[in-house]
Structure formats: structure tokens, C-alpha cells
Length: 449
Image 1 (spheres, rainbow, N blue to C red):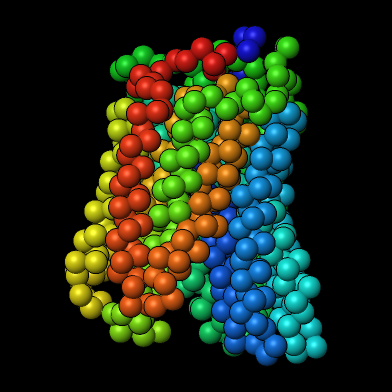
Image 2 (cartoon, rainbow, N blue to C red):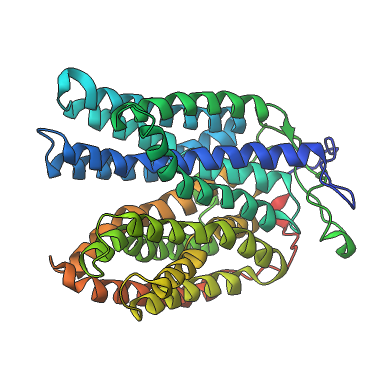
């Protein structure tokens, strides 16, 4: 990429982050919170459908499948458009808007004439999948372009913690709002309206420009969050010019490290989401927790682990070989699930091990996407993020519950076996890390321009 004069400096100085850096972290974190929180509603819609008249298991399965397929597949197009045109902030707001519209579609599907509209359920799933495909590649791209190598992992980790917070808090918020005197179906529409308001705030907050990056002196790596780039200015609200003579085709991105990272992300997600999706059923049927506050607590502590895990692993990614940190994360998740299987009932020990499992399992966002930034040109970050997160992580997420179902051979009593096999699969992803190219801490790779 041809270098040009840097844009306005985004830096913290030695005492406090700059207002621009704080605004980027704040607004992108809000977007992550809303995005991951609203995605929680998709399985809730499945539950509401299961309780409604004329809603079959086939319809619920079709809804979930359509949602995951669109979420995994649309991201590539989102990344290509964003890298070609810029407008990352506008596109993030568009994705949140799509999620809001999907909630209204689900609301209408459950409300019209007192019966379920199957067509609207599928339309809602398509729109939800479309909307959910935007945030992760684009939000990560904003942070990759704005923060230095020395602080990128921390920025992604802080941001990712708010996604985990959304997944943790939204279930409680849903039932709090529903308890105010409106139905659960009406609560879906309420959150659709709140999501639209959030989309407006996000579009306004990300209207300003983002610069790229440059290296900083070793003495500043603990204090400086971001600096001006020796690269073209990137504008979230307007277009980003392509580098002279640069190819924007996908083959340019599919180097060995990106392909290996996609594979590792896919297998990790199959294993982890296969476990996570069946934990409630396992606790209910095998640990006799029942559909109770105990079950809610267990799911909450599992998701809450990521609130702490993401910033921690973001910091580790800034300080150590990212490949080793990724391997540690995979092994930690496997240890967490094996420790959980070694407990009995649903007491403190079980809750502690579930929290440990969540601490490692939900820390992938800063790890995977800080590695992506090391392996691709800066102007292609959104597309590369979509490949690794969309096809890799989200693709594995779509397959994970099915794999777990096949492993238990139709019997909930075999969930222990399924979890053990999936835990071993998660640990085995460590074998893929040597395929990733090693990058020095705070590396300055030529691909970045």
C-alpha cells in the first residue's frame, strides 16, 4: 500500500486515552453488546414457537438452520463491500438495524391472528442471519485499523468482553421486561425498538474517521492505545480508496496462515458450541437441575466467564506469541469441560468449572482477530475477518449442536460421552497452531503497507 501523510493522531498519551480512542472503544463495545445480546433472542424464539400452537419441531429446526447459514455466509459479502467502499460505521449500524427488524418479524409471526406464520418465521431468521453477519468482521476491522500492534489485543479484548456481557445480561433483561406486565412475545418487539435506537447511536458515534497504525517505542507499549498511521486515512462514514493496482480478490487473502486459522476456528467452534448448546439439557436431564433458577445461574456463570476471559487473553495476545496463547486457550477450554464432567450435581464445584470453561471458551474474539491482522493487508481486514469469524467460527457454530446430537446417539445419557469427545477435539486444535506463521510481538509485517 502506498504511504501517505497520517491523519489525526489517535493516542492516549502517558496518562489517559484520547477522546477519539475512548469513543471508538465505547461505541464499538455498545454495538458488540447489542449484537450478541439480540442474537440471544433467536433460540428464545424457538422456545416461544415450541409453546405456540401449530409450531412443529421441523419449523424450529429450519429457523435455526437458516439463521446460522445466513450468518456464516453473508459475512464474506459484507467484508468485501466494506473493504471496497469503507463505511464501516454505517454498515455496523445497518447490521444492528437488521437484527432489530428481525425481532419485529418474529413478533408479527407470533402475533398475527393468534397463530404462527411460518413464512414470517423464516423471513425473520433470514433477516437475523443477515444482520448478525455484520458486527464481528467490521467491528474488529475498526479496532484493527485504529490501534497499534502493542494494544490491538487489549482493544479487541475489552470490546469482546461487552459481547460476552450482552450474552450474559440479555436473558435476565428479557425476563425483567416481561415481568413488567407485557407478554414475552410483546417483549420481543420492545427489544426491537431498543435495538433501532442503538443503531442510530452507533451510526452517529462511528461517523468520524479512523487512522491506521504505526509502531511505538517499547517504553510506550503499556500506555499508548493508538497512534497515527503511516498509511492512508480510513473513514468509517465515507469511502476508503483501494490501493493503486491492488487486487481485491479472495485468493489474495487465502495464504497458509489464514486457511489454517479458518480451520482451527471452525473445529474449535464445532467443539465448543456443541458443548455449550447442550449444557442446559445436560444439567436438566442428567444433573436434575430442572428448569429453575439453578439452571439460569449455571448458564449465566458460563457466559460470564467470557467477560473476564476476553480482556485477559487480549492482553496475553499483545505480550506473547499469539499462537501459543491460542493453544493455551484451546487446552484451557478442554480442561474446563473435563473438570466439569468430573463433578456431580449442580453445586458450587460444578458452577466453578463451568465458569472456568466459559473463561477460556468465550475468549476467541481477541485471539483470532488479532492474528488475522498479522496475516493480511490492512485494506482487506474486514474480508479476512469474515473468512475466519464467519466461515470459521460461525460455520462451526452451525454444525456443533448437530455433531453433539450425533455423538449422543439419541440418548441424553450419552451427553457425558459427547462432551468428552468434543473436549478432546478442542484440545486437538493445538496441532493446527504450527501451521500458523509466527509473528513477533508488536510485529511490523510488510503486508500492512
